[in-house]
Length: 402
Ligand code: 3PG
Image (cartoon, rainbow, N blue to C red):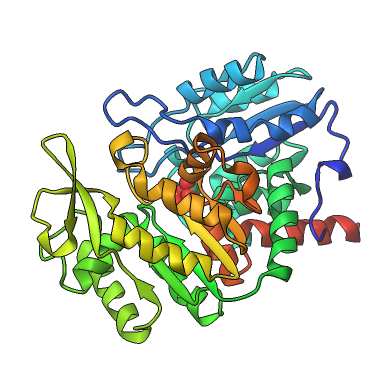
């Protein structure tokens, strides 16, 4: 491996910064964590950090979004999963956090508050600049080692992702190590046609990556689901009213250009399921009316998408096809995942929602790789070097040169 791992360091008695990704779905009313798999995945490295003083840090949500909250509940869940005491510190870079870190004993674990409480963590930097942020200047002197284990946010160049690694010895945590090994292995064996089944709600991020994927021969066909499918339906004029999503006109315009540039690549739903009076109602997309909640794909779309999946050499699926947590609307997500699992293609499924869905339908063992990342993985597949991986490679080069 070009990057260092926990096997390269003796962490006993050391104070380590462990950047994980505990960004979980949050109920907007109660602000409780709905799904905890990201927290569970974050514990993987802790087993190899016995005897170290471990300072865990993560972001949760985005400033201004409904899932933006502190980390107190994450600490409780983490404590339950680990069966060990986790000290939650309601601070990130202030004197409270610094004093807690200075007073730690071997074996102690603390969880800092949401990193995005610091303005700096909401900006993209170049690595030398990230290492000069107040966050990194204040905290790095308290740590012996930086462990990067937040694969789902490895496409961000925030101070916690690339800044500490520039000034401290740095290695991958177990989760990042596993993802990089497996993905590097898979990417050498994939063959076409490459079919991308793309859903999810982070439309801006997805649209930016799609073009790269097509141009790099990683997406011969793109089967759209979820919010992004609705954006393309609007761009085609089949949905005639605003969807109420962020930066809507900009993303619709981008989708419009993509369809114009690559007319044979994109497939959009022809029928969908909406919720009317609490019931599932299947309609042609042209029958959609303002106020309809689009919660699933319809049967004709699923049948058509499954044909593409059956003919694929590689399938990558990211983002659920609908509101699968509700029994009335699980049809599309379940059917597509079954199709992916039963195909002869090399298969990669990504993101927390689909990971949970695979477990629910007993399909986990039939997928070649299940990645914890959503947007980061889409970018990884474009062939772009992710900022976190770049930071880890540079740190490894510096460490080996010593
Ligand atoms: C994710 O869930 O994709 C990661 O946690 C990154 O979150 P972000 O898109 O808000 O940076």
